[in-house]
Image 1 (cartoon, rainbow, N blue to C red):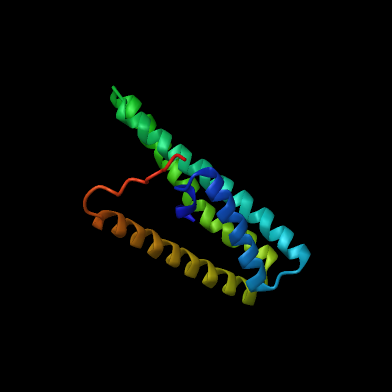
Image 2: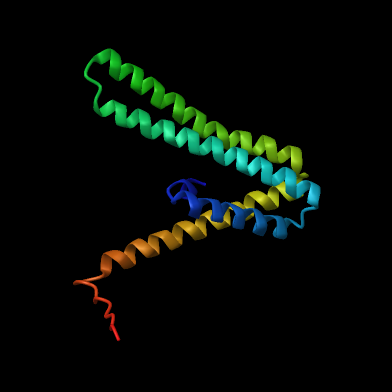
Length: 145
């Protein structure tokens, strides 16, 4: 989930654990499947995070590319990082197919998309709210006794 990687690390970890718990509950996973599922999700998220970091790094280096050859190298690295990021989605399907039967996989994919959609909506609502605030915020008043 892209949203996950724009969060601070601790928040991302908490979200990941909440996601694993809710998904395990929704799919009624056995302890064995839950363990395999959690391991797969954590590994996939680490790969996504690395790919996103590589994308950010290559973009930052593109800004300082002073020669055509240097720019070419950075664009190539950027493309490789994008490919790695997009390959994680395919790998997710492969890994989850090893853990789940088709009914469970279908339910997993559907629930995951619903969660992503709800998170995106909440983030958009939050951004809208922060943009509509007019004027300075009221200061907190602290009384010393």
